[in-house]
Image (cartoon, rainbow, N blue to C red; front, side, top):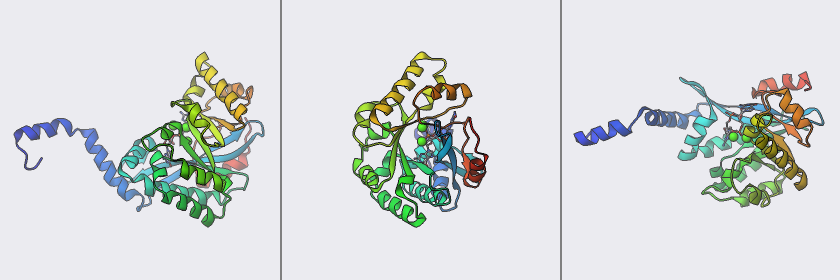
Length: 275
Ligand code: C2E
Ligand code: CA
Ligand code: CA
Ligand code: CA
């Protein structure tokens, strides 16, 4: 508002609030974060209920901000998506996840979260192929997690890249299942490997009959479609026991393990804890 008149200055005072300023500052910092090596991944286990073993880990992004400490992806992923920074960040995530995966036992997979926008930059396919080759890991050990909302976003289903990935042997999981729209329509459009029941349903399933019904029907649907099903956000043994009575395949959540840094994964596997 340098050269603006008094009226304009007032306008800026009203609209240029603290949160907008914070956001722009965060955006500038995020532009430098990749180059400064401030991003890191933490890994949260998947646990197979019947086999009683850890089957892999989901990579979750964190940002070690030099001043503000660790920032959650819920805060900076939206900024990355708006600014296009999601492309270099997403490519970094894939490379790092694959190189970490190369150190794990070969019966474990890594799951990586993707934003809709990432499927509209064809270089992502090349990046994934290269990352897998460089790390020498089988494509079937990499899973891409996408949300149903991204399939109906302005970007559209982007199924050509997804189809190429599926042809390569990469697996695809539908994340936060049950929270979006058109779930069933989109479920049938691609050969998903797995669906992940949104944690909101798991949180409420012992207290709300409607949530219990949703959990039960998603598990039944997965079974009928012959695809895997993961319950997210399992925090209590009561929830786990309830899921054991169903044909849910895998669980994830604080009960099994919070996300940990890559160097703590072997200790976690060695514990071989049973629930
Ligand atoms: P999401 O993919 O649905 O991941 C699950 C979130 O729930 C994670 O939060 C995880 O830490 C948290 N969580 C896991 N178990 C429990 C539990 O038992 N109880 C509760 N209350 N929460 C649990 P996080 O790590 O903060 O990630 C938030 C979201 O950010 C993710 O949701 C995902 O959509 C997005 N995200 C994370 N990493 C990436 C990434 O590399 N790329 C993209 N595009 N998005 C990412
Ligand atoms: Ca996820
Ligand atoms: Ca989820
Ligand atoms: Ca989510």
